[in-house]
Image (tube, rainbow, N blue to C red; front, side, top):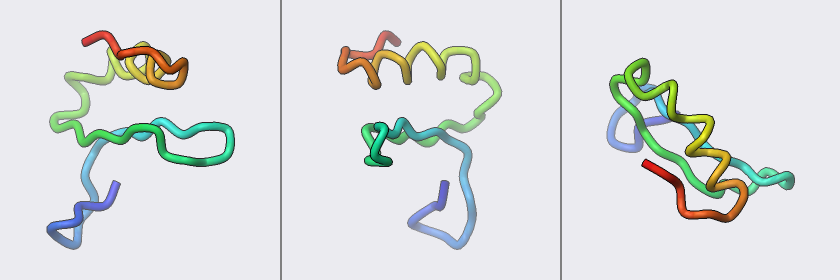
Length: 53
């Protein structure tokens, strides 16, 4: 993901619908500590549900 404040990339993820529309994006730093929970969180968003934290 591109940091809008500086010319650098940041770690994070985005959930896209089948047409490529961004449903949700989030910067995560440090990414590794949160990686395990990204798939269930993104699946909830993609299904239109409130994501579990």
